[in-house]
Each structure stands twice: as structure tokens, then as C-alpha cells.
Image (cartoon, rainbow, N blue to C red; front, side):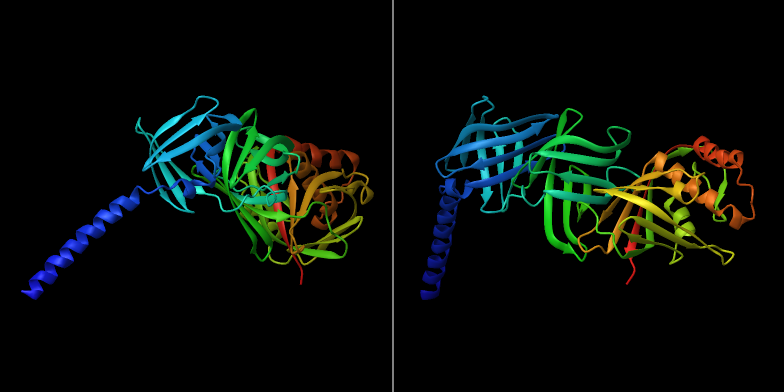
Length: 394
């Protein structure tokens, strides 16, 4: 009989506990909503800053239209929530919350929004220059460079999927609230979820930017260059937007074809430890061991302005042309990124062809022969975007 009474007591306790838990679900969670919260999807993004007194500020973008600093109020009662804003974009519904993690809003209309808690504001961490060779929004790998400035401006260099062309230091506006970056592109805004990791790799700080199914990973690089006394060996190449004639041509005994060119072609051309560059304040020295065992190379004067480098090949041979490229180094100078647009690629590789003609048994360096090298290179290349990654020699 005591066992039976104990069992009834346990059941009664269980129901009491359930009743208490049900009551707990509808406790006042207004204090748990205080903080910065972000909701980011492909077409809609919003950051809410909710204060202890129930006041709130909204930043967001929908279908490319951006708003900021829209003020309002947030009130809760049990599991229900009411949001009223000065732009009359109001909401009434139900909410669930996991404190310091996320909360979900269910509008009476049936719409659902999930907001993630922003533990840190990343507005300061994003400032600086970043390089990326990993962007899931395009099929081909490419190198992109973005610089975020304190004044809310940013510049972008790379092949733009929206622009459909290579752009250099294209300026735009941006704003970071919490872990969201709102960025203007061609008059429209998009929102990125930012994930920042200080010293996330041996090369330095890492930042991921996510928009819907698109993700790009960025490495912080140095603004300006520290080149003196540095020697770098070829590591890898990235090729994008290559368009041109289906026509074979040779450089250093290697066959290339712009219509079919891939990064692997540059691995064959420059791979292993055969190609290296030595840098000083005003000199770019490259060396390449050819298949026949001979060494090709030149000491090319260079002018450095920030991250722009102009190689004066005409000082090596008057028939050659100057080449304007962009260079970027990571935090500890262990990698050097070299960025070439179409004109730079044409001039650089035509210069290499001219300078190695004698080594390939062609001693016709007349003006007409040299002009033909450049004319042929220009005719076969409609566009190309190439970036090389060099690793510091230890």
C-alpha cells in the first residue's frame, strides 16, 4: 500500500512539474531579448538592436533596398511579441527564444524569421585590406581584393559577377552592424553575414562572408608592401574570364592556348621551384630554369605605389613594354599575391617571349619581329584575369 501511495505521489509530482514547466515557457523573456540580433537570408536581412527599456533600432535590406536607424519599440507578453516602428513596418505574433543564441518570430500571417545573437560587433575587425581566392558564387577560382575603410567606404578589385568584367578599386558604401555587413553594389545593397577569426590561420586573420548559398573566405593582407630582400617561389595560379582564339603558342617551350587555358598550364610553366622572384626596393628579379637546362631571367626596375607595382621591362630591352601589376602580402610576408589584368598579362608574357627568343634559337630581334610578338599576343587574347600566389623562400 505504501508502494502504491508512493507511486501516486510520484505521478502527482510529475504533473506538477509539467505544469510548472508550462508556466515557465511563458515567463517574461523581455530581458533575454536585450542585445543585437541578425537575421540574414538571400533576399532579406535585418539587424535589430533591442534595449532594456524596450526601445529598438532596425537596420536591413530587402530586394536591394537598404534602410538604417529605423526606431521603434518591442513589447512582450507571455509568448507573444509586438514590434512597432516609425516606418509603420510593424509585427505582431509569437516568439521563441534560446537566450544568448537565437530567437524566432512567428507573425500572425504565418511568416517566420530567425534571428541569431551577435556577441560581438565586427565593425572594427573588418577594417583593412583582404584577399580571397575562394568564392562559391562563381565557377572559376579568382583572386579578389577588398579594402574596408573607417569612413564607410570600400574598394573592390577583381572579376565582378554582377559587372561581368574585371574592375580595379571600384568604390562602394558599406556599414557593419553586429555580424552583418550591408554593402552597396551598383546602386543596390546586399547583406553579408561576417564570421571573423583573429589569427585563424598561420597566415593571419581570416574572415568569411556569407550571403545565402554564397560564401567567400578572406585573408587579411598588408596595405602597402614590404619587399626589400624577399625571395618568393611559385606556388599556384588562378585564372578567370579567359577568352580568346583557339590557337596554340609557346612560352619557355610550353604550349598555351587562351581558349583552353587553366591554372594547371601555369603550374607546368612555373611549377616546382623552377621559377622565383627576388625583390628589392626598386628591382624585380625573376629567374626561370628552362627545360633545356638554360636559365632565363632579368633584373627589371620597378616602381612601387602602395600595392601597385610598375615593371619597366623597357630598361632591360627597349623593345619591351612596361607592365602594371598589383601585389599583396599576408601578415608575415610568407606569401605574395600577384594580380594581372588583360593588358598586364599581354605585356608581361609578350616581354618574356621577346627576352627568351635568343634562348629558343630565334635571333631575329628586329623591330618588325618584336612588334609581331606583341600584335600576335593581343590578337589571341580577348580577356584574361590571372593571379599568382608565391611562397617565401625559407
